[in-house]
Length: 394
Image (cartoon, rainbow, N blue to C red; front, side, top):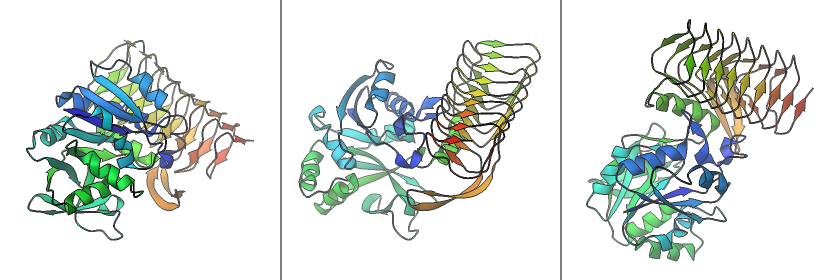
């Protein structure tokens, strides 16, 4: 059996972090989201994967060019018209029953294994969710799928579609029929299959998480860091206090006086401290530096980032390549943001900083503020509203 993984999308609601990376390559506990999908598929016994790529496809293909013995082939979706259109690009790679997954959702091995083992010709993974109106709400009758309602206006039921299916190759006939009518979403294909009298079995997923907005990265990072494997490499000097599960990559140095409380993941080639404090649910990417007397809590710090001394970072996301001088502060609190035409209320959230930004000393950022990539903010500034990419704040 093969797996088709849909990984062509951009993830506009995750900007600025997806301006140079496809959504599936955003890091969670220092691993791209797509890597969790690949690992779950491999552990379930599938070794052949067809990946549908599009936006920034070269980033994906370079990262997974020789990955754990998996046989990976790529097909391209030139225009992101919908999930069924994406699946259609893989038609010539499929010879029999297969599973289809999204590359930007965290899924576990056990859930995929249940899907594979199910004897039904058509099966879907569903998940209980507190807000089904944000997704496709599913209605079930005697264990079979009765209906999917995409983003219902009212909170109905408690289960949603994960968009993960086991399907026969014959599904492509229906996909092509609907595509000829300009219908390109997989949900409509499934509805059409049911109209034709096919039964679709429902299986409850154990672990399934979706990253839609930047702040989802913090929540999912916190969950997945608890599921990480932990090992200490590099050099940990005398006088360092480590409590709980802490992973330290090779060629990383943690200097004397540092205080680290897990779960924490620190990448390779980093320098931490001396006298820095790293608190739970923080990940620090490869080749990053945290200077003395800085404190980081529940944050995602990506690769090649420099955090100046006496800085305080909480509930924040800092993308790769950011250079931050001393006495930086990200204030954590509540805010309301407009994303993709919708107002979103944030609770207890810090800063969201795009890649390759430069900050002078003594910069303070209000709660829930998004700063685009390649921004330059001079010293002694307080940032109270969104800063677009490629902006200089004088």
